[in-house]
Length: 199
Image 1 (spheres, rainbow, N blue to C red):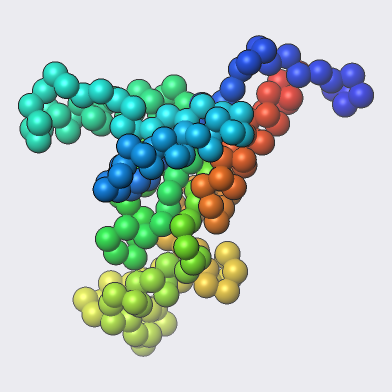
Image 2: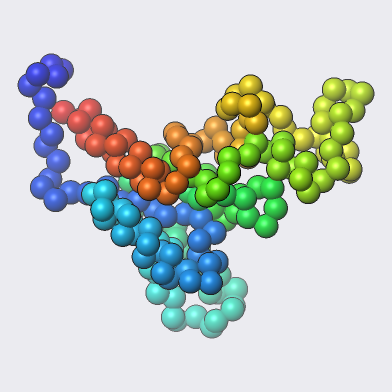
């Protein structure tokens, strides 16, 4: 393919759809937070899909059926998306929100592009675990917590502090950004490059 003759044949007005994964759904102002993220998507030529866009009204509030309906609706949004933007900020502990981690894995299995972002300081997973557990170097050379469980430490992989979370998560993103806007831009660029590559 000659770059001098390549043209983009995407449908006029076509935009990438980005699933906005994260613990943001638990914010006190979750709906407003979702709108903020969707507005950023619009500003950068994308369509944001926020979990709370789903209307779940046919099941009893707080029931198992409601939980299952929410999961099913979110999976449909993920399936319809071109990429996933995941808020990987620590949530109620040293690791990211487990629901978001699940959605990242589901997206990966479906072949979706995944970009992560952090809100606040970038800290390595080992350092974050040490902030909530007693961690010591044992005779076998491994760092272990107070229960004897080994703690991942891939310090040379991603800078001085290492990976920001479990390796399956940290190595599962195409890019780790320091803001949601940077992450949206990255996903749009990936999508555009993919469209050009189809020519």
